Image (cartoon, rainbow, N blue to C red):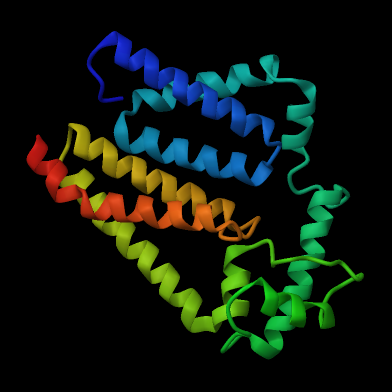
Length: 223
């Protein structure tokens, strides 16, 4: 979005297109919803013209996407869908467990979860985690742990948005909006899966947050 030359723009467009294709092929509806939210935030905070472009793209997509992708997306919220019902039973079992451990948690890691969860599971549904970052953190660290995460994320988002407000244009403004969009999309996806189960993803989350906060002053000077 900030590149000046045609070659540079084509390069980044190709990278973006490849990542979007990979995201589409994952068949992960939670990821799609997170991506839609991230794109919407980026469009609104960067350039209102992107909102019109997004509306046009959304209008065209049903005519060009494979039927399997459309069926997968429209099945969001369908309790007869095996993936949806599987998560629902896990969430119910986790909520049942939180009645006893919601205040102080059971300790960190999937091993602790796997030892306690079977006593509270519904319909003998086995799960390595709660399939929800918020429920998982409540299980592991209790109210205090979840509260600290939300406070950290909100604080980081406020600092990044402050850059967008103070710096109207240029690389730093777009960079801060990109970080805000990424974190918001990630947190929405976390409502449907335990996105920190993979430690590489866990690391990338904090790298993006750190870059969005700590690079800001230098980026402002760069302009």
